[in-house]
Amino acid sequence: MTDAAEQDTETMRETMKIAIVDDEQDMRQSISQWLTLSGYETETFGSAEAALKSVGADWPGIVISDIKMPGMDGMALLRRLMQIDRGLPVILVTGHGDVAMAVEALQLGAYDFMEKPFNPERMTDLARRATEARRLTLDNRALRRELSSGSVLLRKLVGSSPVMERLREDILDLGQADGHVLIDGETGTGKSLVAHALHACGPRAGKPFVTISCAAHGEEELAQRLFGPQANGAAGLPLLEQAEGGTLCLEDIEDLPPALQARLLERIDSAEGRGDRGLRILAICNNQDPERSCEQALRPDLFFRLSAMKLVLPPLRNRGEDILALFNRFTEQFAEEYGCAPPAISAQDAARLMQAPWPGNVRQLINLAERAVLQSRRDGASLGALLSGEDALPQTGVEGGGKPLKDYVEAFERMLIDNTMRRHRGSIAAVMDELSLPRRTLNEKMAKYGLSRSDYL
Image 1 (cartoon, rainbow, N blue to C red):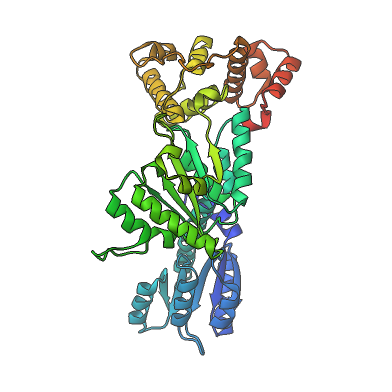
Image 2 (image 1 turned 90 degrees about the vertical axis):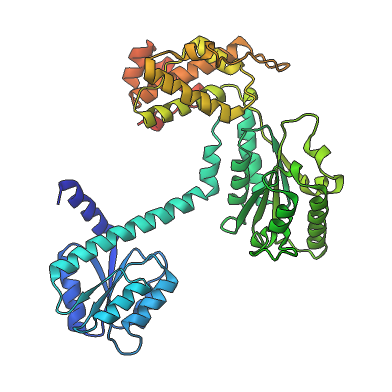
């Protein structure tokens, strides 16, 4: 075994337990003693019933159990454990001639089995592989829980501009409420992410989050999916029932046909008339066509029901220095993915990025960042060459879209310090030397722009 593998195994043994279930005390002690000498933490149980009082879902370890025991035997214990946690590794100990039973156990979900008399080295190897598998299962579960948590989703809404600070505060406030919410904004502003964050930040977190695009289906199919099967007997629970107790997210609500708007309104009115708060609707409107706003596309009574609470996401062009912070973050991510250095950004490039109208918003910025990294990797061309070529960003044509010179200077200065701190991994001395800044000036500027050395270590 390599040094790295041995170190990983030692870490595994420090955190993972092995539950040993056997009605014979000598056998329990023998297995426990051997595994303890091998570096594992063990816990012994004289019966399956006793083990079930301690071993539950997300048990931080594995189970080794004899099959033949009085009362609840090992097979019955296996069935119960698989009902509690299908991802729990269970190793069964079988007597001679019980191989057919062991095969049945594998079909029921057992991790593996050992025949008596068993080889201690094989038991250690099985324990090692099973605990590694258990660790991976628990890590994946923790990651899924983290990705569905409101705090993680809010961190994905990157930006320190006042409009983004206010958006995060509004999400926290509305997430705690129970009414329907209309989420409006241009394409590419992150409306789906905001919908997930609203669900995850409130009391419905952990309940169903069901989403469907009203623009992706014909009227008949959409009716069946939302309200239930019609004459053709389509199978499956309707989405309105699947989302009961949780959240139904209706994307492209402006494309919901009038007949279905009436049915949805009837369902909402009926639930409110009964005092039923079992379903919350988040309606996403793609506000891209000024001639056809969400208010114009929906019947007034439905619009007012869905927009009792409303979030309007800011377009990228109104987010100031967030543009440079986001672009810097995306180029670093793509540079790491493609194994190259991120392209350098000049003051002129920074001004061009901040002046652009960004009709595609953050999605367009991501695409530009990837093209910039690919071009820089291929021929070393600067970002300026990309911005001046056939894909050149137009200057803002939005009224009032221009920004004071001070904003450009501060945004570029913040980006320059941020880039340099990242490159030197938080070394203040190296940053001072490269930017020719005295310590006090660097500290003042980092405080001004909300930069912390600890973020770069």
